Image 1 (cartoon, rainbow, N blue to C red):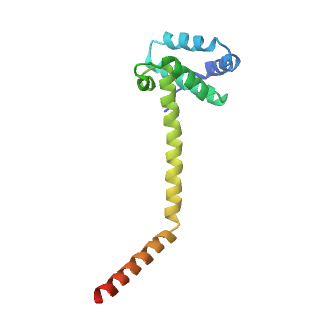
Image 2: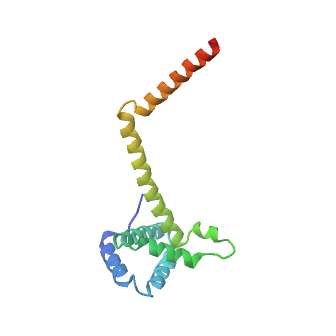
Image 3: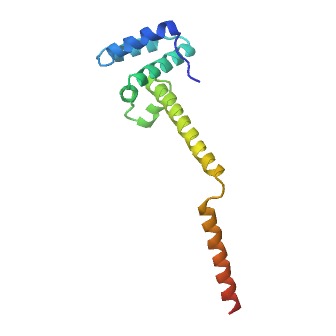
Length: 142
């Protein structure tokens, strides 16, 4: 479930992000806001709102990469993708949403194929198995 900041603040938040996304000050704004949240729900609201806003502006992947790049630990780089950093949480929410959509599309395709009835592939397999049985019987009778 994705939580967002209250609607009356969301439009202002989105406009601020839109205006300053290409600015060098935006990482500072993100981290100042990020560090000021005392409660986890506020952090989740901020992460979700930031992700939704940047998806609308089509700059979410760039932001996630740049935030993760800041957090990368040279000794253990893979651990940078786990944890509670802003980039890691945005990546987690984004990948969960993308995987969910992909999974739904796969299930729908499988369901549609299954509802079409027996496929020609199944028919081909049964023909092949029958053919192999006949060959085996002929060889065993020789």
